Structure formats: structure tokens, C-alpha cells
Image (cartoon, rainbow, N blue to C red; front, side, top):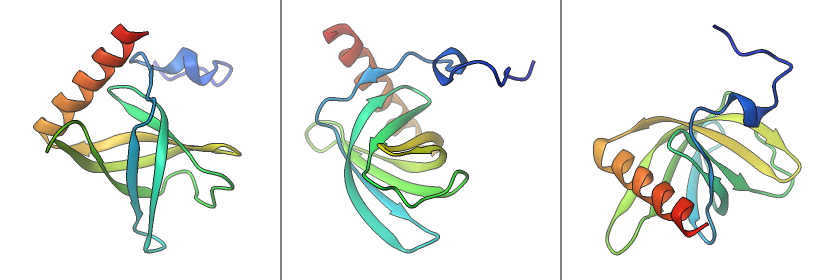
Amino acid sequence: MAPDDSESPDERRHSPRAAAGDLQVGLRFESVQQFLSAYAGDISEGGMFVHMENAQHEVGQTVALRFEAGKERIVQGTARIVRVDATGIGLQFVELDESSRKLIEMIVRIKLAAG
């Protein structure tokens, strides 16, 4: 069943979101050969919101992402921009290796448990 356009983004989410705290994310935008370092606002097993002022990116663009998940543990993969607003961009994870996916699951569980 397709999502109802009248639903809010929160109602369409499949995974709970956790506040990301001080999670710094490196993003490489292939379409404009731009690299940015920004902070995630929240994270779930399916994606994350990254704070950016005046984001000049478009829904549908693909971005390479990379961030640390503890000592010498790196999450890396690709994501698609699914939302752009005045405070940042919403990303949906597209491709993550098994190790990165497990690290994200761990981050979300820890952040949700911490409240």
C-alpha cells in the first residue's frame, strides 16, 4: 500500500528516530563535487537528518556519507536526499555494507536507550 500524502513524515517512518547528539557526518555530493562536514540531528536504521543552513541540494540527489561510530569504527555508504528544508536535508540510506548497517543499528539502540 502506497503512503498517504496526507500523512506527516513521522507517520510514514518505519524505524524509530533517535537524537544524534554530536554525530559529525562527512558528505560528498557527486552532482556538484562538493564535500561538507555537518552534524546529524537524528538517525534511524533507515536514514538520518543532517543540519545544514541554506541547503542548495535537491530531492533525489545521491550523496556518499561517512562518519565515525566509535574508536576506529567507520560507517560509510550512500544515501538519497528525500527532504530539503531551511534547517537541513533528510537522507535515506541506499547502500551500506553489513558492518555499517550493524553499527547504525547499534547507534540507534544506544541513543534510544539513553533517551
